Length: 640
Image 1 (cartoon, helix red, strand yellow):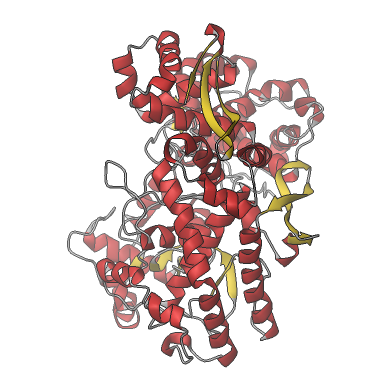
Image 2: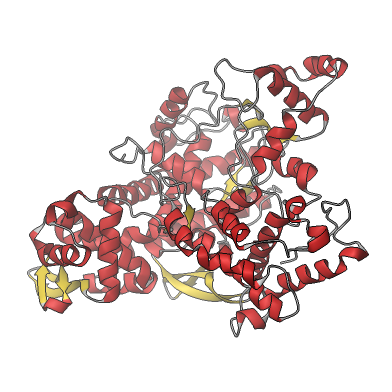
């Protein structure tokens, strides 16, 4: 991983950081950055290049906080010597004001809005733009704006004239807009000459400045948050603490000849400990789907794939073979697609209600391909418990067959030394292997026809929108496919009317959840069939091998939570233990937010004071099982 840092930055006196007069300061900065990956700080730990680069970038962000205040601290004259403990506390105060610490440190919006509020465009240029780009001057009534209406159109004209607009669908920052402000480019223009870091920010909203949104219809309803980041704007204690750790490494830097902040200034770190705890949140794991949602999700995915998968793929490849614009669907549609409702390639809907009506009627072939890709990813994610990054990187070579059994060959993302990932084989059910072979067929056929494809199985077919070629594949976009799947099948909603739009992290828990809910609801038999397991104990062994202990513990806590909340007698002892440990009454426990109950139960499972395990026994129909909820320190158990 190669990254470079340009140290030719302007300080408050107009000199450059690379000028001879600032050589001492520059040397200290370079040593501090190099220290982040040096054994003097990391000890015997060997990190991969990505982790090392991330650590260096955190150090860069900290330096940039002070460089942006160069005039206040007179850095050209005194380096970092004028920084006081109160200034360090002020930095940590800023750090904890936003769930994205980098945005807090650089605070980009005032630079952008302050500049755009002052720009002017002469009348000749304005009139020229009114003729060549009239969309710049169209503002809807009641539109949210960060500038006055008049200044918004002036700012748009200035941005256009100075090449600060890019197509909204281009690059990794694809949006629903026709044109969007090139945020990083604009910030480089405004403050790039003063900072060392990359000025790229997530969710930097500029109301009224992005142009002419087109209807992308990404989701029908609001999404149920998949973790507490979506509902809580406070900074994560993990992220904030990492920055504080890097800041504290300036003590080690001083010991190695790189004096930046003084030891006295760094006393502000210790003084801000309470501030960090009070102002931050624990970073939540991804939430677990409710049982009924997880159960229906996998069932719908399997049904859609089996009933429609082959017909959808064969029809798409027939269109690719003809090579004409697919909108007219100039091939004979098989009975499966006529029954599904397919009549066109893509939607021309003008409203969200019309689009989602067409989606559920199966009108558009491209949308049905999105649903199919989502179905296959749900099947694979649920039955093999793989991470999103691992799924998106699969190729035809990842499908391994050996003596009638299938295996998934993949690189473990979290088991590596530096950049060398561990290559492993994991068992894979036949239905998942067949589905992946179907995707491999799409990639191989497109390549055979001369179309561009990267070879990854979950790459998305081109939609045909604004492309010179109608066929081929682009980068995987499983989040979009999951959204299409969820809206097509109208997955469940929470008490606020928000839909459960599934994500890959949640799929890893689905299979285990269904197993642990079996005693109350059934539903494991179909999954055992697809896995080829004759006994429940074989299925549980598969679960424990495929899913980490931490994830499995989260599943157990989530399932137990539902029983606790409804006062089920099977978890009476465990409920009493939770109340005793956390100073609650049973009534208080029953009305606590679900995530709090899960966290309490998970703590007890991790400490070993409670346990949730299957108990296998021989029944009338062979091996059966029940879930046992134990409170170990009381030597009591309740059966589920």
